[in-house]
Image (cartoon, rainbow, N blue to C red; front, side, top):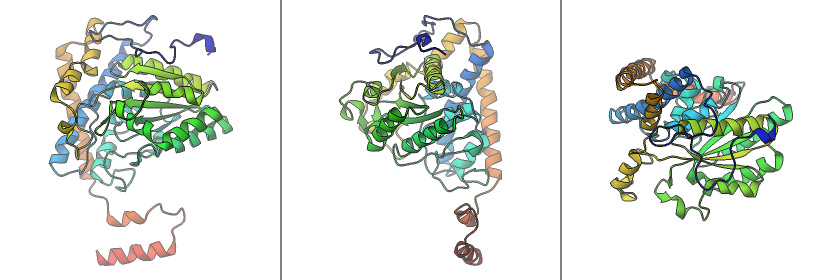
Amino acid sequence: MIKDTWRFAPFSEEPIQLIDEEGNWVGDFELDLSPEELKTLYRNMLTGRLMDERYQIILRQGKTSFVAPSSGHEAAQAGMAKALKPGFDWVFPYYRDKTLLLSLGYPLEKLYAQMMATRLDPNKGRQMPEHPGLKELNVYTVASPIASHVPPAVGAAISMKIQGTGQVVLTTFGDGATSEGDWHAALNFAGAQGAPIVFAAENNRYAISVPLEKQSGSPRIADKAHAYGMPGYHVDGMDVLASYYVTKEAVERARAGLGPALVELLVYRYGPHSSADDDKVYRSREEVEFWRQKDPIGRFERFLEKAGLWTKEEGEALREEILAELKAAEETAEKAGPVPPEWMFDDVYHTPYWLLEEERQILLSEL
């Protein structure tokens, strides 16, 4: 793709939007997605929302110990996923990215297994909940320390550039990550080296309880890209098609050898930061309700309805179908049984180390 053909101008003051809140297409180019692709985007968004709600239930049932709500982020995540080549490109996600991962094809039962630490968990129960990873899809395991996964993402991208693999890295994070030194060091290195990477900030306006205006003097996260020699895109992340098309362009630029980009996706999290947070302390119920009226799923339903691709009855039927799939995935994960304690010794070394093997036997004898 020639540089002159890029659709979106970086560093816009107003967020890039392709579907307005009434569900009208407002883009200045022709929509080139098929009805099936549009319906898949909707299905992925709805699955992410229903899974997020189901996670709250298994938390109360004592089947997991931690939840990081993601409702409100679905459009940004489903759109980003569609811009990638699953299993070829690499993803370095953060702990709120369930819609992103399931949209890439991460098996639902394995996501549940990770939440409940059962034998189907690819990480063998050695991560806290909401921290999945999957080798088959090139999904790097989520890390708890904020922004600590961003420098490794840049390293992976530079490796791909050196080897000429044609792969691209997408790394996601919240707005709070942009206040970390690791984040700035990573963007600086990526800009200097021309790494094929897209940095995606899911800006939900709060770093736990700290609003964006108290984190940064910059009115937009995208503006920070100026300092690192890359374009910064300011996007309405409640608009799934804007999220898709802008991320797609950033990915194509990186794949064409034009270097990194920073994409800021404006979203809002309807739930607290986590199950250990009381968001009523730092934001009003009126504020949350205001943003609920801008729900990304409702907006896309209105768009699909105007295109003759959705009705309320079809939506209810799909909801029941997805809930059945989630229930089946949860049951499959749970039936696999809990992770055995001795699995803690697996994968520490490629070749088993004699001392760890002795400790494994001691643990087994005590159990």
